[in-house]
Amino acid sequence: MTDFIFMVKDSSYMFVTGPDVVKTVTNEVVTQEELGGAVTHTTKTSVADLALENDIEALLAARDFFDYLPLSNRHDVPERPTSDPYDRAEHSLDSIVPASANQPYDMHEVIAKTVDEGEFFEIQPKHAGNIICGFGRIEGRTVGIVANQPMVLAGVLDINSSKKAARFVRFCDAFSIPIVTFVDVPGFLPGTAQEHNGIIKHGAKLLFAYAEATVPKITVITRKAYGGAYDVMASKHLRGDLNYAWPTAEIAVMGAKGAVEIIFRGLSAEEQAVKTREYEDRFANPFVAASKGFIDEVIHPHSTRRRIALGLRKLKTKSLENPWKKHDNIPL
Image 1 (cartoon, rainbow, N blue to C red):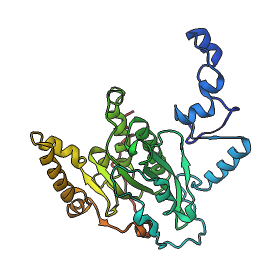
Image 2: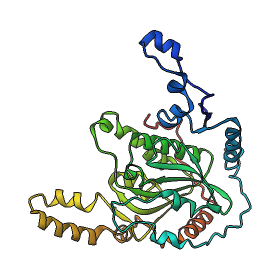
Image 3: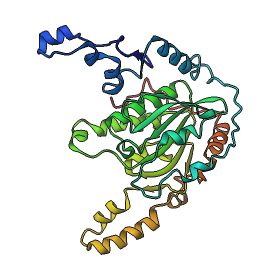
């Protein structure tokens, strides 16, 4: 029931029934560590958020973490003095996205170059690595950051990443922490395992969380933003306040090759290649979405920090209330 749980490797355990009971009932032989140790809960189950090497590291991490949080849901987010200028230009971001759409890059680098002093406290780094969640600061004030990670499964959304991000977004909203979202998502992970385990319902948790959140929401699309996954990642349709895109952004229902194979099914491979290039020229840029109002502005990557800082200033007094209800009914 707690908001966040830190565990210590080889000394802290959680389970509903211990190894002895498991052995008696199911004949499975399992150790405490395998059944409910720190590594198990921070990689497989997502019950815990961080696995630390020893007690001292755990206490120091808790101290760092607590520094990002308001005292309660009635207090403002903490503000810390910073010498990092809000308008710092980070020109290395202009070339971080590879020329090939199939090549990955590390979204941690984008986050580190955007937040104050490069300080970022990641939550659940070992679970659902295709999405990054954590806390940073802009102009000394705490922000929650959600970002697709192209280095893991090409950044697709699946059941685990949807649940991880949805819980994080809801926490930020509960404590009035603004949310910054970096988007590079080629879609939802296809496959029978995902469908049979209810990706429709679990994906809806993230959609619900973003739609419900009343805190300031700023989104930056760095590269791919395809289909329903684009919609779910803090799009304008989910009441995003400021939605920016880099010139490398592609906002479409799906990638050019897949779209052409469906639309022009009867054509030869050569003709499909021509159509693919036409599709890319027409839709593989953010300007079509911007012309329809789904993107507020196409920005230079090096000015990302400045745009987010100015956006947060504008939204500092944002006040929005959802229609009254006894409680919401998130798809559990």
